[in-house]
Length: 147
Image (cartoon, rainbow, N blue to C red):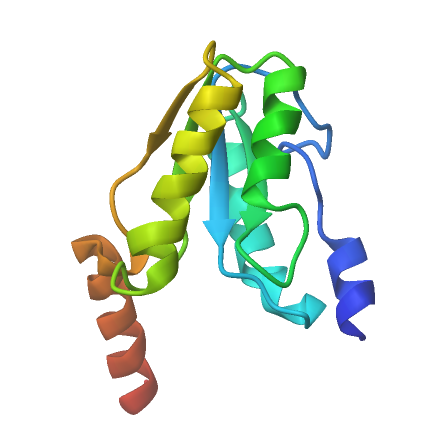
């Protein structure tokens, strides 16, 4: 199965495959890649979140090499009636220039463009969260010692 076909097979809305325009909203922000297969895990994450929180809109945005950009995703959510947007950085580390410089600047720019919106960054990179580190450590150990 090609990457494009795989992406087409993934649901793009809430748990029922219907895109909702609701407030509040969350943007899952990834780095991005020119390879469409790169975005499959973040799309799967979005689908899990949509099923877990069906009254919240979840969108995906990319810093580079993917569409939509963070600017575009925020603008779409503003136009569709969201009043608050939480941005979840799906990055391994907060140490790179995107998390240190680019993301804060884009959020500040969006706050000026859409003063009616509450736009917040949900902490640092998700990869640094203790529960994510624990899950990754468990996965590594499981692969080292399969049962």
